[in-house]
Amino acid sequence: MTIAVATVPTANGGKYVRQLCKHWAHKLEVELDGDRGVVRFPEATAIMEGGADAIRIELSAKDGETVERMKGVIERHLDRFAFREAPLAYDWAVAAG
Image 1 (cartoon, helix red, strand yellow):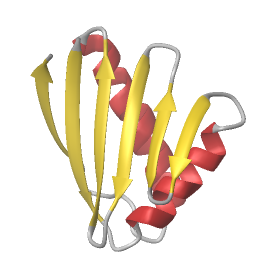
Image 2: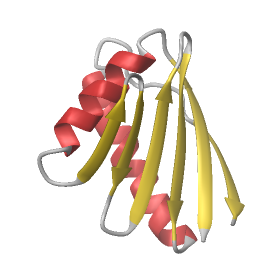
Image 3: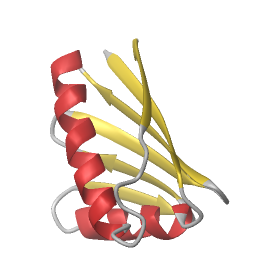
Image 4: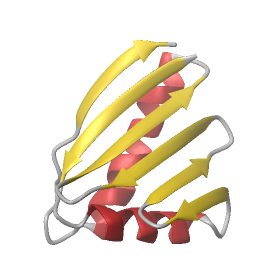
């Protein structure tokens, strides 16, 4: 298992987490509780928490290649919703779990 964690600075974290979860809920299993969302992709899981000044994203998958691919998916979608601020700064830290 590989886990990557990012802190993404934005004052609109909760809003973006809710938008992403509602967007992905049409095709994926999603849990949304306030500003915290869990998205279960076919090969990965993303846990996102919107705070006052950032979004914390924890992405886990079976291997590093999948994590790298899914980081791009999450970044592209988040930047699309945050178009007024995009591109956002993604500070990923990767650790084998």
